[in-house]
Length: 111
Image (tube, rainbow, N blue to C red; front, side, top):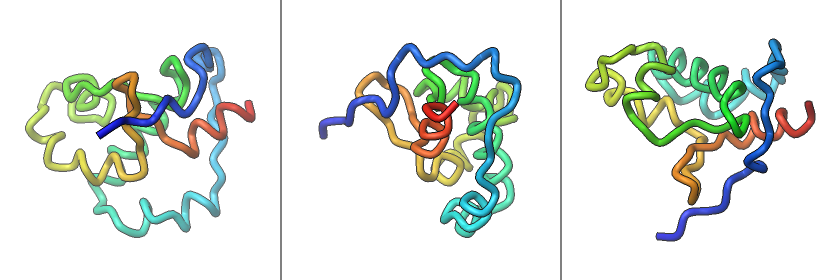
């Protein structure tokens, strides 16, 4: 299977932006909010926040050790793996071996 291209340019760097916009209604009414369990919701939201300060913004590395830490599980990768699929609901794995969240990327481009 061919993976899609990255959803945002690789030079988008928002590490100096302390605040990330949150479209409250869009997030509240999203499939993610409606479908995932509480632990996946918590870890998924932490991943969205962490991706804001990744380069490129809106992305995360495809590495379970790093994702586990960013999602609040520290080095307990086996625990992270229980929630990974739900926590990454809506994320897209691209051909640069990074996950991208379409809405976070959209907000990054607007910033």
